[in-house]
View 1 (cartoon, rainbow, N blue to C red):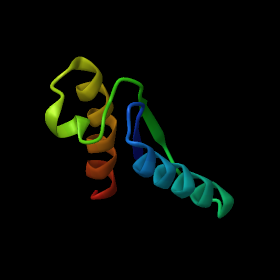
View 2 (tube, rainbow, N blue to C red):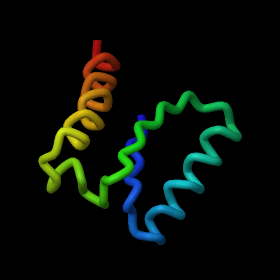
View 3 (cartoon, one colour):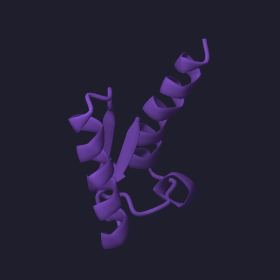
View 4 (tube, rainbow, N blue to C red):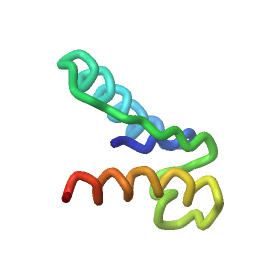
Length: 67
């Protein structure tokens, strides 16, 4: 599970893109939730519907993996 912030800082965005390419190249199962208006740390600092909508599937996926 990867949440991808649309307003990410360039160095971090480059790292996220490299990770995404590597995960896909090796066949890893990867679910991406795009947050177009999100910035780095959006899940902690931006209390918006978009942030909550992005965090919920990630939270649910972690919980499901623990069962």
